[in-house]
Length: 340
Image 1 (cartoon, rainbow, N blue to C red):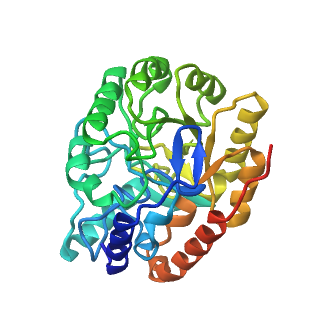
Image 2 (image 1 turned 90 degrees about the vertical axis):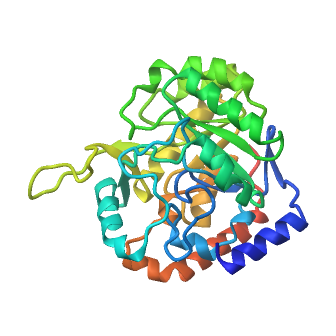
């Protein structure tokens, strides 16, 4: 953690920030949140190479965001297609970069990734990471392959985190990187896990599933808000060999390329009469991007790979990228979306 982040954390603990925005029963500090995975668990263990967090985040006050969404957490630690390690000595940096190349690639207009829900597990997160991020407003993202796994995750969060201490729990029942058909479990997940949660639940929608039907199920079973959208299932091949660029083959496409898809989904949800609050994500980088999503019907917006990812040489400009993020935060903190 940088000196600036430690100072910000002390300030927040001494002077708690009151929620400025409410999406139903979800309290946000403003309408700008961060997307799952891009900032890991909200804090890094290694200072020099902050594994799991965009280097840009080291120059941005994370406590000022409406909420920080964690990497998707599962019941047990999960290697996925990557690793759970979060401390790498400099001597092993080339091996780490090689691993990244197998699960994440920059493509036209964005990024494609297949990390496969690699994470330390819910117990390790609640024990080792969450206590250090209480100055942030947190959305804990969780994922599983059965209703029982989701209820276990909810129960563990209920036990460790008092009601009102986090913004929400996000149910990721739509990830393509784990090669599972979530259509078969989504209704039972919502029916069994949502009522058990002491915290508001957000359902993350995929444009590759029947998101209108899933949004209606969310409203039926008491979900508090929707995240729209998850990454779009995609594929890139090596033009010289014909082999997939990612070790998993297919991956999730994010970044500027999917912004029109995200806007379409948000608009279609509103046109279909869905009234749940919507946290929109997909290609957002500027204030104009945010405003487009607000006009489409979103209540809050989420910064993902379009903001936090860069080419490896591009990270040398992290302080400049961070200036743009801080400027966006200032505008959003004082922005009032148009009435619909």
